[in-house]
Image (cartoon, rainbow, N blue to C red; front, side, top):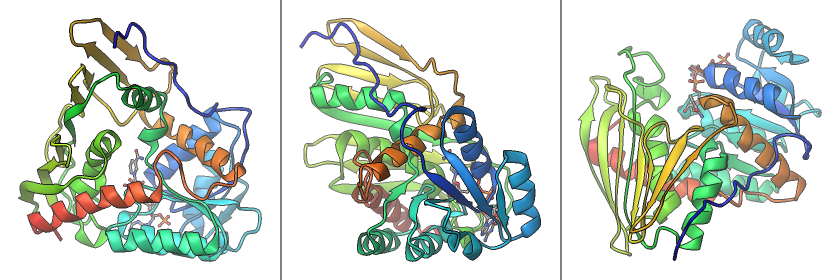
Length: 341
Ligand SMILES: NC(=O)c1ccc[n+]([C@@H]2O[C@H](COP(=O)([O-])OP(=O)(O)OC[C@H]3O[C@@H](n4cnc5c(N)ncnc54)[C@H](OP(=O)(O)O)[C@@H]3O)[C@@H](O)[C@H]2O)c1
């Protein structure tokens, strides 16, 4: 096929669509980015925040213009004015808090990775289905304009048959055994925190792999500090997904297809740019022009969730709980092979 232009992005408009009343659990760094993104770019309403400390909740509420601040997560879950709960705690708390939100009858958006094990993720999916509430992993990258374009290119066969996928995500996190990234009790490690994006990208293009082979190393705390995971597929495609918390990497992603090569040279999980080089044809370039930098793009997933809830969906049609579980299965197998805690 001869491709001379890229399809238009196909995402929910940031303003003017359905709105939800959001409650935020665990007001740390990403919660601040999420609420900032919603307040800046959408009509979504953050109506309540809950911390384990009343003082921290109050502080966060003041900074972000939120009406209600709770000093316990349970208080927010009992608030009838909250439609959907955003779980922004460390990984080890995702499943427990998701279950608590679901039991309270709330819809739930759970930070990545949705849980720390496949069994936990399945438990969330079962509980949400039983309660009839909407549940979604905050895999925000899938809802960005760029991902909607790549999805169309893949569906249209513009790349031909995708045969080789690579994605990496690494940054240098100062060693602190108590920190979220290095502490096994908080489910630290590069794979769960950053490898989730690399594994998601491979899943987005190729689906679930046939086999998983990981090599890497552990920090002295026992969490994985960096690894490369090779994935094989029934189609005979290969993927190589890498993550590191001890060195910065390009954060690039590539899809080599029989008809074209697609490349994100940097920052592939956030608003960025890609290039599509059609074999024997044109090279088409796309750049995000929203003006939203990195985590300012968290808002796309929120307006998508609001649309899905308004439409009566119980899962995201773009990255459902089965997708979250498949990605987590890769991470779980890789972590087990590395002997990570
Ligand atoms: N989408 C993205 O781009 C992105 C980027 C960074 C992180 N994340 C995800 O967001 C989640 C939180 O990461 P973060 O960097 O925001 O973490 P963070 O700054 O450490 O904040 C996490 C918050 O969780 C609460 N919390 C509950 N139990 C805790 C415990 N046992 N230990 C420490 N804090 C606890 C704390 O709030 P209170 O004590 O006040 O309740 C804390 O402020 C993770 O799942 C991470 O993967 C996503």
